[in-house]
Length: 164
Image (tube, rainbow, N blue to C red; front, side, top):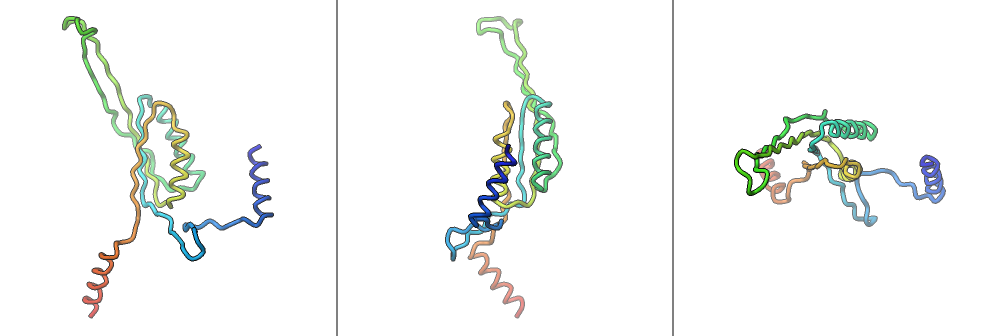
């Protein structure tokens, strides 16, 4: 059903002539082009209490990267974080009536390499919508950007002085 709707959508867009090439620049005006952001590294860290759920989600992430041709690193498993608390059963209980609470938080991470801003936002939206219950995610970006104008001017001055 999905493939037939995609085919009809493609046929209508070809008939209407609204097919446009994929670029890394978004155009708001014909004269004004805004360049897309570039990310050299996106680190995705996800945590949960069930290692089987994290393993399943890791498989999902690797398959998504493979099918979308996104360069990634292997999944890294970190040692789990252990939280222990020995508390009284009630606030009036004596010292010998204690309960032992323990949680283990398993941590995994994966890095996505060399993607554009539109690809990154689409990929992150897809994986965040499919995150299992009880799993938390943290995303760190490393963006590639130009030097500020003041730094460029200083660099040009030093290169002209060195070349002279």
